[in-house]
Amino acid sequence: MHRLALEKRTLGVSFLPSGKAQVLVWAPLAEQVELILNEGNTSVPLKKEDFGYWSVITDVIVPGDPYKFRLNDEQEFPDPASLFQATGVHGASQAFDETAFSWTDDAWQNLPLQDYVLYELHTGAFTQDGTFAGLEEKLDYLINLGVTAVELMPVAQFPGDRNWGYDGVFPFAVQDSYGGPEALQHLVNACHQKGLAVILDVVYNHFGPEGNYLGAYGPYFTNKYNTPWGPAINFDDAYCDGVRRYFTENLLMWFRDFHIDAVRLDAVHAIKDFSPVHILREMKEQVNQLMEITGRTHYMIVELDLNDTRFINPLEEQGYGMDAQWIDEFHHALRVTVTGENTGYYSDFTGICDLAKAYRDAYVYDGQFSPHRQKTFGVKAEDNPGQQFIVFTQNHDQVGNRMLGERLNELVSFEMQKLAAGAVILSPFLPMLWMGEEYAETSRFQYFVSHTDPDLLEAVRQGRKAEFAAFLAQGEAPDPMAEETFLSSKLQWELLEAEPHKTMHGYYKKLLKLRKEFPALKHLNRKCLEVQENEAHKTLMVRRWHGQEQVLCVMNFSTVQQTMQLPTSAKEWQLLLNSASPEFQGPKAIDASAAGGEEVVMPPESLFVYAGTSSLLTHG
Image (spheres, rainbow, N blue to C red):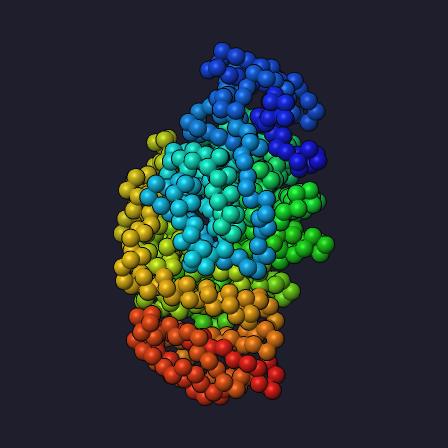
């Protein structure tokens, strides 16, 4: 990567301090490339450079101008590195100067990763108007809840105005229906002023099927590998240098020009790269150089389905250097424990014992045989700290990829919801909430699209139906194209004033407050952890400590009352939280404290949280 690309965006149309535009396009197989303006009435030829690039410096285009590129004196296409598709994926690109925004976040420093409390949301469904501006109005709510990092589902331009975001076809462009690039900068600036970090979900493993014009420009794809979405992105075949630069520049742009604090890279197990330097490692190296230049801190978080620590191990240990990963196995073990589901990928999980292993080892499968995969799977993650693992009771996938989009609160009792929330938030990992779970939102989050190609729409409908065979779901899947499917997925903020939603919201606030205030919970040292499970009784006891301070989380996942003996590592245990108390609309109150070694009686589906000071006994 050229140092210039570290300091400024070079691909597409960018603007120099002189006001002139610098235009750079990668089209290695083209014989002629022109910049087209004024609806085809103005043409500026580009000069061929080395390695398939075409360039020109010109004063005929200014910010706000629509433009396209004409290849080989034939067809015209939008810019692959467009920052704004104001009229959608098939329309002209609109020139945008990302350096013109007046930032006021100079004093902002990204939070230490271990202090992240993540809140994943879909911009379109989070508020009624479904824009970045609408989201800004809810920032104080998120801060009051205890969130420290807002995670946006993908905002790269997709077809129409309704989509999860994983059908994006312009990685550099910010979705027009959300407000476009300047509105995103405004949102990030507002978050930083309020002390919130911003995580952006990016998709570097595939492109959506509609509006994808990259193939016209060059070999962005390879037939060497198959992915669930068709030909793989070309990270290691002939001409891959241009593709690698394209995506690396995209990542640097989000960090440098939009002040994004962290990215969540979608399904990196679907990135196919056998280069000597994996693209993720190359990206991390470039980000490290960028941080040296800017003095800012940025994190790379991956969605990973491989249980392979190579992705999250440091560069100096020959890893790819990713800072953290989503850990689905904690979710799967927890979900089987609270619901008993055992279809599809849940068939690999038995419940309470696997949940205990997830607490201890992060990965449930770290070298055992996986019946679902029909192979031995995973490696041990012994030396990776707790902040490298992000856990959750639900996320957009685990809700929206159900046929009906049911949230957890539709599948379990109110008491079990509270227990599951505590299991995540009080874990030695980074907790992530899915928008609305904190007040038991009742709107289902369903799969929605707004493609314009009728054949593609029908293919999406049929593919959606086929996807649910493993879950044995009953009934008809909602139509992804119907506007009502999208509208019914929006949050109902008025529920916050009604019960039991108001109580659930208060309960989440209490859990997050405990996590922040108690060092034994705040410090994510996986070595300072002891877990005891009882499979027959479906109970779990998680003890964490920092120095002399201990916090004990006692969980009863069964539907009957259970008697639990508190450990003798503390002489006295002070009760911090009882999920079954009337304060949280629970069925029962208990005494405020108990001595070490004493027994406590736990109501069904309940969580007790205690604090204690270490006795003379060792931590075990």
